[in-house]
Image 1 (tube, rainbow, N blue to C red):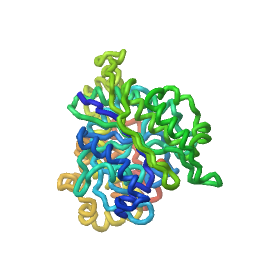
Image 2 (image 1 turned 45 degrees about the vertical axis):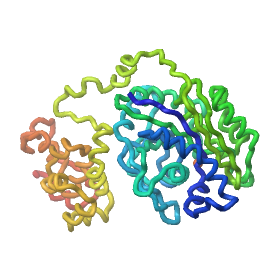
Image 3 (image 1 turned 180 degrees about the horizontal axis):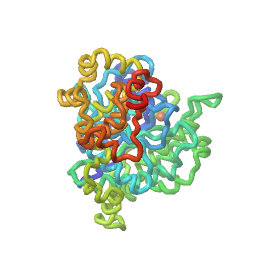
Amino acid sequence: MATIVGGIATSHTPTIGFALDAKKQNDPVWAPIFKGYEPVVNWLKDKAPDVIFYIFNDHMTSFFMDHYSHFALGVGENFPVADEGGGARNLPPLKGHPALAEHIAKCLVADEFDLSFFQEKGLDHGCYSPLSLLLPHEKEWPVKVIPFQVGVLMAPSPSAKRCYKLGKALRRAIQSYPGNLKVVVAGTGGLSHQVHGERCGFNNTPWDMEFMDRLGTDPEGLTDITIAELAKLGGMEGAEVVMWLMMRGALSEKVEKIHQTYYLPSMTPIASLIFEERSNEKPAESDAAYMERVDHQLKGIEKLEGTYPFTLGRSVKAFRLNDFLHRLIEPKHREYFLNNQEACFNDFALTDEEKDMVRRRDWRAMIHYGVIFFMLEKLGAVVGTTNLHIYSAMKGMSLEDFQKTRNAQVLYSVAGKDESKKTWDKPGK
Ligand code: FE2
């Protein structure tokens, strides 16, 4: 079973990454940052976790207000560095752990936390700033990272209590994973700071000290504090400390803080701490009952023949091909595809198997492979075929025979105003 070896908390201000990239190790103003992180660097090296479950918030870089959610779980294989305006930092992409992420997703959803899921998204300084100082990364990272984006920037945002409860559910999820993995949970953000408006520059060191103290000894007592109170005490953006509480929720009730540091050079304190577990309380619900609940909704689905529930596993496995087909909603991409199919395949690095299925318009093979149906109907619209042609091909029937199974013999597609559909959308066709 997977084990939680401890938790770390850290600020995620861009200052940390800047200090590293600018090689400020020996500059007296910046040196305390490096010194402060040394115990965390050594602890991570010593514990050698297989996975870090990394709780952070993006800063309207990859998670914008056009689609913003409370809890977004990184389920994919790769997470490159995001460009925040001046070119992406020169760091290798983080590697995810799709199997553990899918297990956590199933567990959290069973515990009524509604999540969103992402993959192949660029991650900004909220993720990469502290990690680049905490871990060696010349060619690749020594540990897999499951990023967990918390939507703290747009109200209504999740409360301290909700985050803490999610942490508790996360603990159970990680500990019930059947693989033999060592996992560290990292909560990031904070501490007191405000970066917008006339109140920008606000800090409150006594509150930061109290928060770090109570996080170890009285985390539940912190969960009744509202976002407004957190903003009053620690600045509006400092209210992101709810993510430290999520990390704390994932640890045992009794913990020992083996490291704490705090340095305030500019707008945001650069703080870090390490908790180690000091108790191993057993949950009231048995492991068997818990897993029964986790698997409850999809139990027996495998008995439905010709049915392929679109799981996270399928979505990760077939992301490249689904992404290729999804981009057919962009006029430029579909034009390129129609005019130079092979070059378009190569640009997306499709495998021979993937190219072959698309070339042959093998709808059934694509479904078996992991393409979601709604990409098929987009491809159908682009190449001028109808949904009914796709349904009949998946069924292994002629169009006419399949149409006979319907109450009316109609043809339709999602082609919108595309002129080509007129070739099939005519009376008598
Ligand atoms: Fe942040």
